[in-house]
Amino acid sequence: MSSRDLVLRRIRQALTDVPPTDHPDTAYEDAVPRAYLREHGDRDTGRTVDLLAENLAEYRAVVHRCRPEEVAELIGRLLAGRGARRVLVPAGVPHALLDRTDATVVADRADLTPYELDAVDSVVTGCAVAVAETGTVVLDAGPDQGGRRLTLVPDHHVCLVRVPEQVVGSVPQALERLDPTRPLTWISGPSATSDIELDRVEGVHGPRRLDVVLVVA
Image (cartoon, rainbow, N blue to C red; front, side):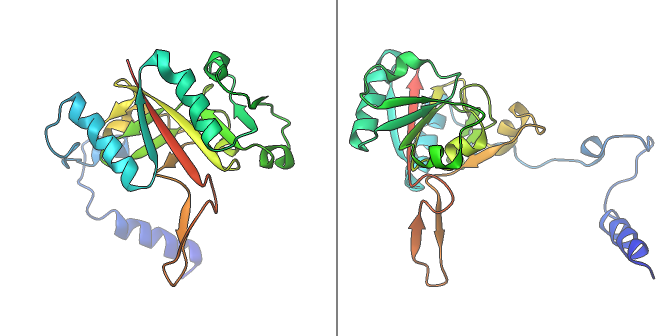
């Protein structure tokens, strides 16, 4: 049996539980029943946001809540608290939000070198959506988020989440809002890993510190 035949046989075996359809051209996502719960529990907007904040904190992110007019002052305090001297800001983030900081604002450029990125202390971005049940913030490289590298190299990430419009209860609800062709980064707390001794190390493949600002309209 050739490798091709082996692969095709395994595919056929994997599809044995897919129900038959009268329309062989039906898309896979329509042919397979998906009767699982879309969300666990019955929560209003306030409880959903509270759950998001709770799960973000469980992952060791630091959660802040403020009104839109308070964002600039809060960002200034967060950057000063981290001793940030250089802060990177994607083009879609209003630069007026950096009016309360003394740090040098670095504009997002396509030709930023790894050395220039490594010299940045903090990055301030928006997000695409935030998932309450998992405490996850999702970035999709939109104008207020920039390329994926912007949030993987700097040691400190300040992420702005608009409440309530960017908060959903569950992953299925988040997927409905996301474009699968875009580069998606799913962030659940600061970057962390553990070795075989279960010693936790933060900042290995992403920011060591994550501040999530829930901007309540």
